[in-house]
Length: 168
Image 1 (tube, helix red, strand yellow):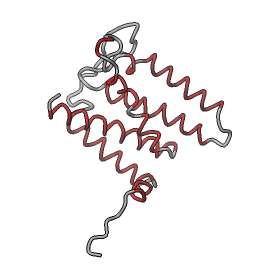
Image 2 (cartoon, one colour; image 1 turned 135 degrees about the vertical axis):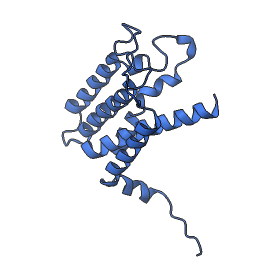
Image 3 (cartoon, one colour; image 1 turned 30 degrees about the vertical axis):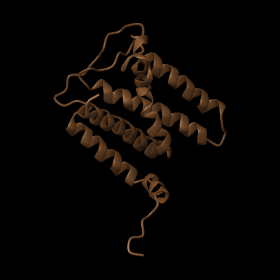
Image 4 (cartoon, helix red, strand yellow; image 1 turned 90 degrees about the vertical axis):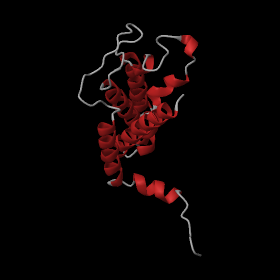
């Protein structure tokens, strides 16, 4: 893997995590759950290459069947667990953040295969700039960080980072 490819992937992963965190924070007060769920679709990077289609990047994990399976889990969590609602919010944050990942990826030239494994047809959306291009990525980062700054999500992260006491 080249340095350019590694930087691109790191930026893409960070973008999915930031957007998921922002959605999880603003909609459900669950930024951490949203950040992790925003990355879940890219678990396909861990599949062995020998498996082939649909177990490749932007294969089954970027499809409608995977989304429906995740939605079923989220609905199950919503109705079956924790009457006070904290798990319900987490389940909803997972579903929304996962959807945000797919929406970002559908705007790229490669697109996503919405009916995998029934079909290997990739659907891309032709836009002048796409989901992982510099301008949209910057806008997603700025928007997500703005949303996070309007919640207490960044405050809780700041409390966990040890402060340095220079000069003492």
